[in-house]
Length: 79
Image 1 (cartoon, helix red, strand yellow):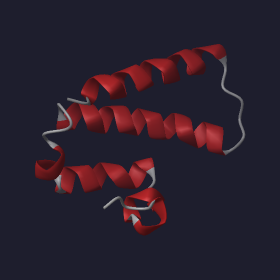
Image 2: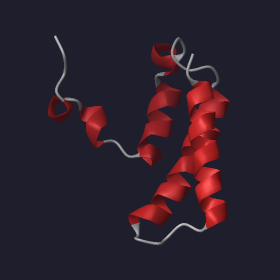
Image 3: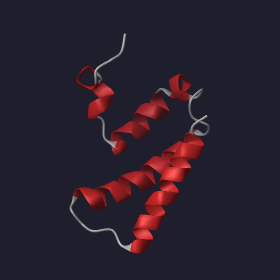
Image 4: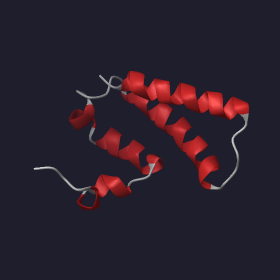
């Protein structure tokens, strides 16, 4: 049975809230993600960039490059 996003509390979780959830429940995620430290660092950096975007501030070229690298980092964190 699939879970609809509206029924899934994680659908309402921010990146900043996700970090302590992952830490507290690492055993549930450790088969899917390679490194707790790496995941935390990547999510923290993504959250900082997301904050800039959420406040309608245009990203400069360096920030766009950084965001692309962070996405690649996130993809590498997945097993």
